[in-house]
Length: 469
Image 1 (cartoon, rainbow, N blue to C red):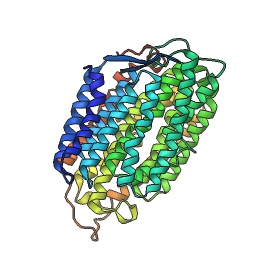
Image 2 (tube, helix red, strand yellow):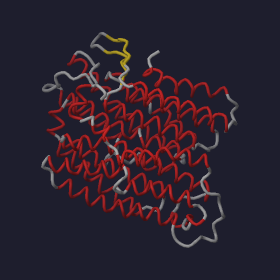
Image 3 (cartoon, rainbow, N blue to C red):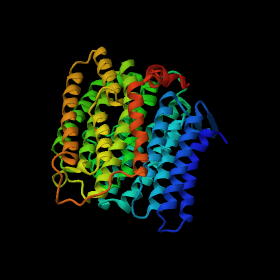
Image 4 (cartoon, rainbow, N blue to C red):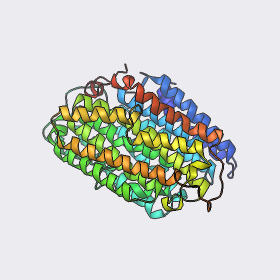
């Protein structure tokens, strides 16, 4: 069996088989889940240019179960496998067995999405990846309404994606087009097809004003699940813009670049300002994600090659520091029973390792040079400026300054200040907790000082060629 197919099926099958374990099991299910996620990372890493295809539809258009890595999806799939392995290792929630099974199912469905080379298969996995999150929100969320809000928003986007995909297939004759190049679609129904794609991608990212499902989802779920959703699932829309919209409908990406930049710019400032006013630590990171992802939307709208390269670097960087922040804030909440900033403070006195890890993740999020966030931001800003867009660069610089403010506020209110006498003394990071988050922090440093492997994938050519370097 091809490794690319193993990568998709292994976590799904393993997650289903976990139900054979005792319902109350906590240790064995987490251990098995971590091993499965680690093996999946290895298969994704080794899959490389592996490709597998079986045709399953010939009328009214050709479609195939076609899976394989493009230069962009390869890195996002690796990011997903790494984040999932760390999330499972950090999992200590009630009903661990069922939660780990959902995490593995989420990984498998998202790998199916990112490794799909057929638009129709991409659209099918787009909806399938909603299911594990929906059930996680029902079982572990703070309020059932959050689950339905998440599902309705994202399913609406999935419906427009499916309709646009069907229309594309009928007009183009095939949906087996991701990473294959070919003549772009233009005229006739093409603007409506682009609108269907764009709506789905913008909901999933999300951007203002389609973001209202995101803060309650991120704050209501246990941190391991949120780390995967924020770190990787939120990149599905950006990935769609990079490998589908810019390759198959480039004229409309250019034609509607200004509205896309406006939405990205509003998300940048709005997310940063709201993050600065929040007292819930997880909501600060949630709204910071809205701001950070708005910068990538601006990069995509500019269509500048350097900005698109920076978008890929920043997609990976944001996935790493967002996942690390949520996992670390989960550790804080486990120890202190709260994530409200007014009730925290001075934790670094008794938790220096936890404080150091949170400091690295926060510095990456605010764009410290030498870490991955800075490399992506710099490339995007230079590329957008080269494309002749001045005001988005100014907006982005303001948002970066605000990012420094809300990230330093987050860290200072949790870790700094005098030791709180009213808080019980909790143990510092254990070796297992440190092991769960260390790969994310190490990858932040590695990408920050050596982003060249990602930069070899110039987005203007990679979406057409579909070949790995």
